[in-house]
Length: 376
Image 1 (cartoon, rainbow, N blue to C red):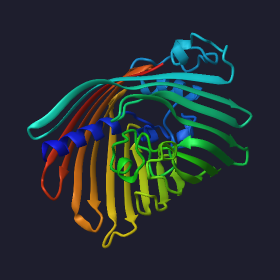
Image 2 (image 1 turned 60 degrees about the vertical axis):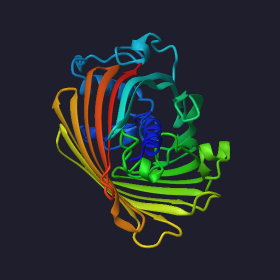
Image 3 (image 1 turned 90 degrees about the vertical axis):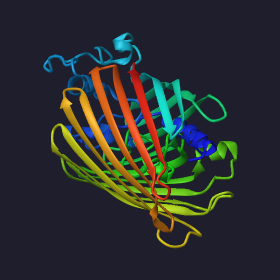
Image 4 (image 1 turned 135 degrees about the vertical axis):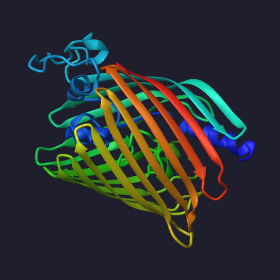
């Protein structure tokens, strides 16, 4: 890889690796819906009070307390700022997300190391009588400098019969929202950290299924900055809960023609299974189509296997493959390895290693990421 190409790749990875979202590894705990712990129906972001409590009782190494002792709302170690505000905020829930990190990237003789604050966000949600008002405000490290902005905000309603909607700025529901936004099934399909849409999403929730459908005039940043990539976008996702630890997901995504981009779309299927309480296995396959591209579509395959080897210590391995449009022998292959340690409720440490290899040239690109996640 040439130095100029490597520098571009390094910059892109810095931006793509700026945030983590939901953790589908917890399927082994029989939580197959994101809303079991998060306000957002597509996962990630602010935890609900129940999600905070679960992070202490089920996920941390040393934070467990007597389950028969029920803490008052807004109190306890797991609450906002360790319960400093008590129940004074009423239905308003707040959170602070900080991620000081070290990033090391390299390709052959070219490499760089950076210490940076990847995330510094204030998160807020208000929920009452089926209504939810949600927002995130924080810093966005970008190629043109750090920017402070609200990159996710929406208003939603969920009725007792399972019908719901939300409108605002958010990532569309597609496939599995893995915690790593650089995964081939996320960044490769245009579903990375800053790819939110301004959209209307309709949903139908049942005991064993979740259907989500979204309509959007385009990517939010493309609308705001008029970068020539704004395009009508629609997405659909159907999740079938085959059991408490078995999930099947069908997804579709279509983007119309933009000034600088042809019309394109994707379809995918994903399956998750947790053979044991501490083991979860997710597999996703997608085919991406683009107008004007002849031959085979671009295929993406990903497996993520996660094992809790000790309470609060998770190990992950994820082989990933992405081919080029019209060339199934091209593209790149990735090995991703990760260790997550969750000692206490409000903080955890993550270590990630990625090895990406270009299939045509054999060029290898390596990334090491160390994060201290403070969730207050």
